[in-house]
Image 1 (cartoon, rainbow, N blue to C red):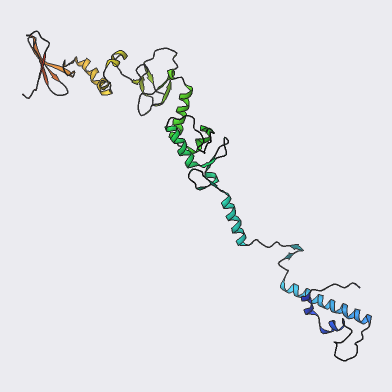
Image 2: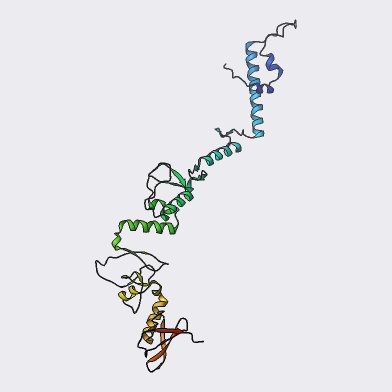
Length: 307
């Protein structure tokens, strides 16, 4: 009969007779006679002891429940320790950081700017400042800031990390590069200055409207619209006479038939006339000019009204 080997802990359920059946001699030095057991008796007692031990083990297993390592014959994998999980998360966090070669800081991968034109990688903030500096210096061809790297950065690639103002400047610079200088001009209003294209093919157009700020300007003089004055006359004016208020005064002087002081060129108004002499008020400083026609000379003599 085949015999099954038992674990050392299973011997706790075996009585003394179990061992007596296994040994046919007493301990050496005892001096007693041999304890003879027949083969049949030995086999019977051995089966009885094994059956008794098995029933005890089964009853104890039922009382303490199934083993935590075995459920319905399937081994249960012990959970990973918290310490191991923390180590894995830490290593994963370190691998998600990238190094910026400009600011020398580690940033998350979603905060890094990468381009297919080269292998360099920089954070969004550094690449945004780099492009803004180049565009503000009127540099249309912006290259990678990497050492000895000549890769060109494209506007569409950099657009997500740039401000609206930088994008507008870059787009304007690119337009200037493809538009001929003879067809290129700008809105004359300083708070607009939009890039415009002259596509009239030689036709002279004076009054135009900016498509961006929707204000009128003179395309011939490249200035805000000068109503009531021709372009030739406007261009003969001094720089300090071309303002909006100056043109309004000029238009008013025509309606009132004001003249100009022959010395200071201010607009004056005739107040009285006596014979061949007359007096006029100078609008800006209140001075009066007397012209003496009796001397037959075109000489003016200013004097104060309070003298």
